[in-house]
Amino acid sequence: MNKNRQSTVSHRFVHTRREDNAGEWYALDNAAIIMPAVTDDVSTSLFRFEAELDAPIDPEILKKALALTVNRMPYFNVRLRRGFFWYYFEPCKTMPPIYPDLDFPCQGWNINRHGTRMFRILWKRNRISGEFSHALTDGTGGIGFFKSLLANYLILKGVDPGARLGEGEWKDIAVSSGEMSGLAISEEFEDAYQRYFPNGLPFPDLRPHAFHLSKSCLPKGQYRIISGKLLTSEVIAEAHRRNISLTELMSAVYLDALQHLWYATNPPPREPYVSVEIPINLRQLFPSRTFRNFSLFVLISEDMRLGMRDFDELVLRTHYQMKLEYDRMSISRHLCRNAGSARNLAVRLVPLRIKDFFARVFFSKFGESMLSGFISNLGQLKMPPGFVPHILSFGFIPAPSMVTMTNASMLSWGNELIINFGSLAQSRELEQLFFRRLRSIGLHVSVSCRSDNGISED
Image 1 (cartoon, rainbow, N blue to C red):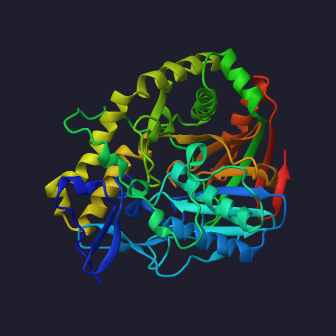
Image 2: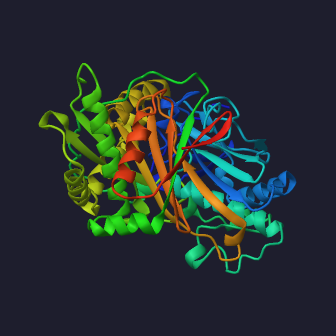
């Protein structure tokens, strides 16, 4: 059934769950609206979390754990549908299946294909993985679902969490007995962009197009993962020695690798800017319990026409650019620009096919064209004390992009910092330059590459 999905009153923009004579449905949040138009079989919009446990995965128990998690968080169990004016999420009437894990993550899943869910759960030997479309959620929302799934799995295995789940420090872990989907509160699936929409602010300045890596691609369906593991305490000590944050240090290392690639390109690139995008969790500035998207980004840029900068100088410049960009008022300007279109009556009345065209134009102008790559830091991951001995490691893999080609994601688990580069490019130069710089400043890092032949160590 075709549905003309369109809100008519301002306060309803915040509430994504709707109901009409055709049944229940969910509106896409502000960040999700653009994703179906710019997603395909390669740039899938999927990012991944994975956890290595201390025992082989029992697929039957994993199915039960997934059913419990979906019953508690039903707003994840949806598929994408097209209306005349907007995309919308339709609840799935069946439980999601689990899948054997793949050689290459985040590939072979197109959210625009009829009936496809916005996430999938996979398993292999001791590893559970969850891949989530950015149309559904961001890193914070995805890890909340994934932690809830792990909690349900371990509880079904007889593990006592040693803490009360769903509140306090563990409020992002949603568990239930399987018949309590009504416990989902509306704030968990609100469009927090619209809740905090700051009407009337000036838009942020338009950024120039940035340098991009060579478009020499891996064969379709392949997505290379190169991982680096460091001691979190060692990296934090180095960052503190420089009076900066861990994220700022890693962003400067990324920027340093990009400037070396820019200067190695012959002939010189047309775009003189190298830019690193650093996603930020808006829940830290604007309180919300939403599991939908609620993130924006800070963009750190350097003009290569001014010459190569040494690393110490890049570190300082990255630190001060972050200070200038990452504050509530500056971020509010981005909120005003990005969230305002959904409230514009003229935009709302444009048919979806035309919206898709302009969404691709908007994404090209204000999206990936402005960045050379991104590095996303989820931060220190924590689980209840009873679960910790059973979880050997976590991983966070970025969504693939045919524009930036290579991107990075990182998180900390215990005293281990795990950095994963995901790449569609044949060249490994960016990753090599990144990890060489870490070693050059005295950090100890082990590097491995995941491929269809398994894991190779550096």
